[in-house]
Image (cartoon, rainbow, N blue to C red; front, side, top):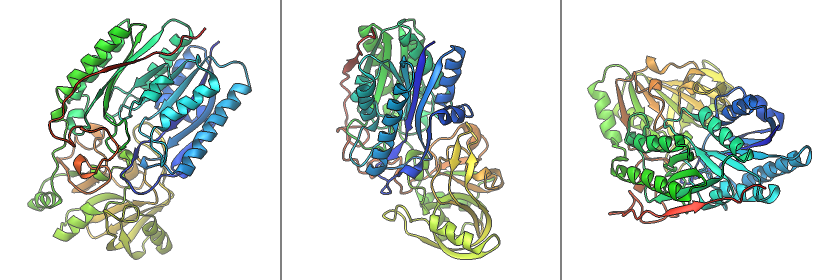
Length: 504
């Protein structure tokens, strides 16, 4: 019976968010708690566990640090604690039982700390130092990850999501687990090829079901289904994680055929590049947004403020849309999310039914947002603990208050949580369908969340550390020239290949 060790370290950051992430921004689990939790959610480790269970594998859970939300650059003290705890847990697991046959490592790929700009690569290199050069390691990654050379040098294979918005967490874990078991059994000999593409991309064309990016993904899926193909995908990176290897990447893992892997990785990359010019977001100014709302739009308008997307690493404390709608006197009932711990503390002091004078926003990113004075009635108070609508993850928003100020209902949390579904609103008694407008702080949710029923979706060009207006952000670390930060960027593709020594 194979013994497979499982580890997880996941976070996506915006290095443009001035507020550092900390240790408390992670849900940390150890040992059997890792398995107990992940059997309750449809994520990567849940999918891997399903495969391992069917195969009669003995699972050796070690350590899981999963971001409660994306955020700013990870504080160095938090990184040192997480990385040391994870590696200590692996050492303990290895020392406490029979030999380990392989490792499944669940990662995101877009972490960055104050000093380490490739944390995933660092962890894999350190892990190699613990388990040796010939231990099979397979890594699952978000397609918004940044596929560094160090990650490929120290893993046997990577497996990447095939969907955006992401709906294949569970299936990605299944794919990774099946590939790892084939490597452990000596059935395959992975060799990886990747092609770097000088582009940072956003927009509706990245929706894999309907956009042009879906073409590259379908090529990758066909490559992976080939008898020689073991894994294939396309990384579009996270444009807000400004690190030295930030760009897009195609990747193919083949069974021992380096030339084939290179050709197919090149084919995926060239298809992607042929569409890159269309992978931008048409944004509407705040003034044009308010003009459209005042002109009257029936039903519910989805106001997409992706510049403050906590799932992309933004601070969550943008009040830019609220300030604009107050300025023009918009009277339609509007639902908004906000991160503002001091406002929540005032609401708890007043109690449900109390009226408070407070400010909203600008507590985490004061360089972009000024605190906005409001008078509001406290409608609901909660602990902020809930499960996501999409895949059942446990989110902790901290103490949370629902405030009502005129036509505006603001769900204010003490900390950011992922907002790629409606669970934050639902958990606090708010149904977006009952409002004239709803602010959506996520670039793309699954269509049924908002797009399928909102009368209109309007993407706004608001300030924020995850703005789709990429030149606004001010990248300083990523390679240049790169689209769309520079004019007339050329693509001169180069295939890089990686192969681990075979296990004896």
